[in-house]
Image (tube, rainbow, N blue to C red; front, side, top):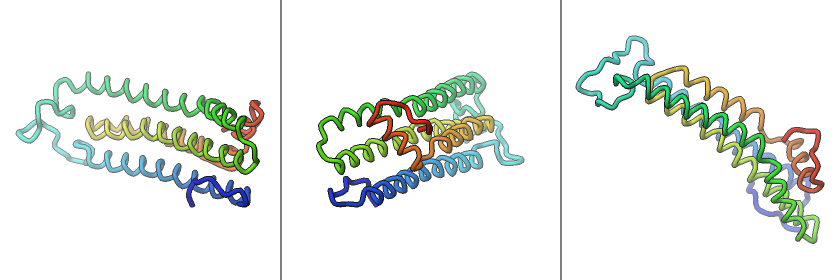
Length: 193
Protein backbone atom coordinates (compact mmCIF):
# COMPACT_ATOMS: atom_id res chain seq x y z
CA UNK A 1 0.00 0.00 0.00
CA UNK A 2 1.74 3.05 -1.23
CA UNK A 3 0.82 6.67 -1.30
CA UNK A 4 0.75 6.84 -5.09
CA UNK A 5 -1.97 8.80 -6.88
CA UNK A 6 -4.88 6.51 -7.60
CA UNK A 7 -6.09 6.01 -11.17
CA UNK A 8 -9.22 8.01 -12.02
CA UNK A 9 -11.44 4.92 -11.77
CA UNK A 10 -10.20 3.92 -8.29
CA UNK A 11 -12.69 3.89 -5.44
CA UNK A 12 -12.14 7.12 -3.44
CA UNK A 13 -13.08 5.46 -0.13
CA UNK A 14 -10.52 2.68 -0.66
CA UNK A 15 -7.89 5.25 -1.55
CA UNK A 16 -8.67 7.26 1.59
CA UNK A 17 -8.67 4.14 3.77
CA UNK A 18 -5.31 3.03 2.33
CA UNK A 19 -3.81 6.49 2.85
CA UNK A 20 -4.96 6.66 6.48
CA UNK A 21 -3.63 3.13 7.09
CA UNK A 22 -0.27 3.99 5.54
CA UNK A 23 -0.06 7.21 7.57
CA UNK A 24 -0.79 5.26 10.76
CA UNK A 25 1.92 2.71 9.99
CA UNK A 26 4.53 5.39 9.27
CA UNK A 27 3.49 7.36 12.35
CA UNK A 28 3.61 4.27 14.59
CA UNK A 29 7.03 3.31 13.22
CA UNK A 30 8.41 6.75 14.10
CA UNK A 31 6.90 6.61 17.59
CA UNK A 32 8.00 3.05 18.34
CA UNK A 33 11.49 3.64 16.93
CA UNK A 34 11.94 6.68 19.18
CA UNK A 35 10.76 4.78 22.28
CA UNK A 36 12.98 1.77 21.57
CA UNK A 37 16.00 3.98 21.01
CA UNK A 38 15.29 5.87 24.24
CA UNK A 39 15.00 2.60 26.18
CA UNK A 40 18.29 1.34 24.74
CA UNK A 41 19.96 4.69 25.47
CA UNK A 42 18.68 4.58 29.02
CA UNK A 43 19.99 1.09 29.70
CA UNK A 44 23.38 1.42 28.03
CA UNK A 45 24.24 4.88 29.36
CA UNK A 46 27.11 4.81 31.83
CA UNK A 47 25.85 5.08 35.37
CA UNK A 48 22.32 3.86 34.64
CA UNK A 49 23.08 0.31 35.70
CA UNK A 50 22.94 -0.40 39.41
CA UNK A 51 26.44 -0.42 40.88
CA UNK A 52 28.05 0.94 37.72
CA UNK A 53 31.40 2.63 38.21
CA UNK A 54 31.36 6.11 36.67
CA UNK A 55 34.64 7.32 38.13
CA UNK A 56 37.22 8.61 35.67
CA UNK A 57 39.83 6.11 34.64
CA UNK A 58 42.04 5.41 31.67
CA UNK A 59 39.07 4.33 29.52
CA UNK A 60 37.26 7.67 29.80
CA UNK A 61 38.31 10.62 27.72
CA UNK A 62 38.70 14.05 29.21
CA UNK A 63 35.70 15.25 27.21
CA UNK A 64 33.35 12.51 28.47
CA UNK A 65 30.37 14.47 29.87
CA UNK A 66 29.51 11.75 32.38
CA UNK A 67 32.86 12.13 34.11
CA UNK A 68 34.10 15.59 33.18
CA UNK A 69 34.16 18.47 35.68
CA UNK A 70 32.30 20.58 33.11
CA UNK A 71 29.44 18.04 33.11
CA UNK A 72 26.85 20.23 34.86
CA UNK A 73 27.33 23.10 32.38
CA UNK A 74 27.12 20.68 29.47
CA UNK A 75 23.98 19.14 30.95
CA UNK A 76 22.45 22.62 31.25
CA UNK A 77 23.23 23.33 27.60
CA UNK A 78 21.77 19.98 26.60
CA UNK A 79 18.70 20.72 28.71
CA UNK A 80 18.16 24.04 26.96
CA UNK A 81 18.63 22.54 23.50
CA UNK A 82 16.28 19.62 24.28
CA UNK A 83 13.67 22.04 25.61
CA UNK A 84 13.90 24.30 22.56
CA UNK A 85 13.67 21.33 20.19
CA UNK A 86 10.72 19.88 22.06
CA UNK A 87 8.74 23.12 22.36
CA UNK A 88 9.60 24.01 18.76
CA UNK A 89 8.55 20.56 17.55
CA UNK A 90 5.23 20.72 19.38
CA UNK A 91 4.57 24.24 18.06
CA UNK A 92 5.51 23.14 14.54
CA UNK A 93 3.22 20.11 14.70
CA UNK A 94 0.35 22.21 16.02
CA UNK A 95 0.70 25.19 13.70
CA UNK A 96 1.63 23.74 10.30
CA UNK A 97 -1.60 22.03 9.12
CA UNK A 98 -3.02 25.31 7.76
CA UNK A 99 0.15 25.84 5.71
CA UNK A 100 -0.11 22.36 4.21
CA UNK A 101 -3.84 22.96 3.57
CA UNK A 102 -3.02 26.24 1.79
CA UNK A 103 -0.56 24.36 -0.41
CA UNK A 104 -3.28 21.83 -1.25
CA UNK A 105 -5.80 24.63 -1.90
CA UNK A 106 -3.40 26.26 -4.35
CA UNK A 107 -2.94 22.95 -6.19
CA UNK A 108 -6.70 22.33 -6.21
CA UNK A 109 -7.33 25.55 -8.13
CA UNK A 110 -5.70 23.99 -11.20
CA UNK A 111 -7.29 20.55 -10.82
CA UNK A 112 -10.21 19.85 -13.13
CA UNK A 113 -11.42 16.43 -11.93
CA UNK A 114 -12.52 15.16 -8.51
CA UNK A 115 -10.21 12.10 -8.55
CA UNK A 116 -7.20 14.35 -9.13
CA UNK A 117 -8.37 16.70 -6.40
CA UNK A 118 -8.75 13.78 -3.98
CA UNK A 119 -5.24 12.58 -4.83
CA UNK A 120 -3.84 16.06 -4.11
CA UNK A 121 -5.62 16.17 -0.73
CA UNK A 122 -4.36 12.70 0.21
CA UNK A 123 -0.77 13.37 -0.84
CA UNK A 124 -0.60 16.73 0.93
CA UNK A 125 -2.16 15.31 4.11
CA UNK A 126 0.29 12.39 4.07
CA UNK A 127 3.18 14.83 3.68
CA UNK A 128 1.83 16.81 6.63
CA UNK A 129 1.59 13.70 8.80
CA UNK A 130 5.10 12.51 7.97
CA UNK A 131 6.78 15.89 8.42
CA UNK A 132 5.00 16.70 11.69
CA UNK A 133 5.69 13.23 13.11
CA UNK A 134 9.34 13.32 12.07
CA UNK A 135 9.93 16.70 13.72
CA UNK A 136 8.52 15.44 17.03
CA UNK A 137 10.45 12.19 16.73
CA UNK A 138 13.65 14.16 16.15
CA UNK A 139 13.19 16.07 19.40
CA UNK A 140 12.60 12.81 21.28
CA UNK A 141 15.60 11.12 19.66
CA UNK A 142 17.86 14.03 20.55
CA UNK A 143 16.74 13.72 24.18
CA UNK A 144 17.55 10.00 24.03
CA UNK A 145 21.04 10.76 22.72
CA UNK A 146 21.49 13.21 25.59
CA UNK A 147 20.58 10.39 27.99
CA UNK A 148 23.42 8.33 26.52
CA UNK A 149 25.87 11.21 26.76
CA UNK A 150 25.00 12.48 30.23
CA UNK A 151 23.57 9.42 32.02
CA UNK A 152 20.82 11.66 33.40
CA UNK A 153 17.41 9.95 33.54
CA UNK A 154 15.68 13.34 33.74
CA UNK A 155 16.01 13.49 29.95
CA UNK A 156 13.44 10.70 29.73
CA UNK A 157 10.80 13.37 30.44
CA UNK A 158 11.21 15.07 27.02
CA UNK A 159 11.09 11.65 25.36
CA UNK A 160 7.77 10.92 27.09
CA UNK A 161 6.43 14.39 26.20
CA UNK A 162 7.43 13.90 22.54
CA UNK A 163 5.75 10.47 22.59
CA UNK A 164 2.62 12.03 24.08
CA UNK A 165 2.60 14.73 21.39
CA UNK A 166 2.96 12.04 18.73
CA UNK A 167 -0.04 10.22 20.20
CA UNK A 168 -2.07 13.44 20.13
CA UNK A 169 -1.33 14.09 16.43
CA UNK A 170 -1.81 10.44 15.41
CA UNK A 171 -3.43 10.24 11.98
CA UNK A 172 -7.10 9.28 11.72
CA UNK A 173 -9.94 9.49 9.24
CA UNK A 174 -11.45 12.39 11.20
CA UNK A 175 -8.19 14.33 10.94
CA UNK A 176 -8.04 13.66 7.21
CA UNK A 177 -11.61 14.95 6.87
CA UNK A 178 -10.71 18.06 8.89
CA UNK A 179 -7.68 18.66 6.68
CA UNK A 180 -9.79 18.23 3.56
CA UNK A 181 -12.33 20.75 4.85
CA UNK A 182 -9.58 23.24 5.57
CA UNK A 183 -7.96 22.70 2.16
CA UNK A 184 -11.18 22.96 0.15
CA UNK A 185 -13.08 25.58 2.12
CA UNK A 186 -10.35 27.47 3.88
CA UNK A 187 -12.38 27.23 7.06
CA UNK A 188 -11.45 25.27 10.15
CA UNK A 189 -13.20 22.03 10.84
CA UNK A 190 -14.39 21.25 14.38
CA UNK A 191 -12.14 18.18 14.52
CA UNK A 192 -8.52 18.82 15.47
CA UNK A 193 -5.89 18.05 12.89
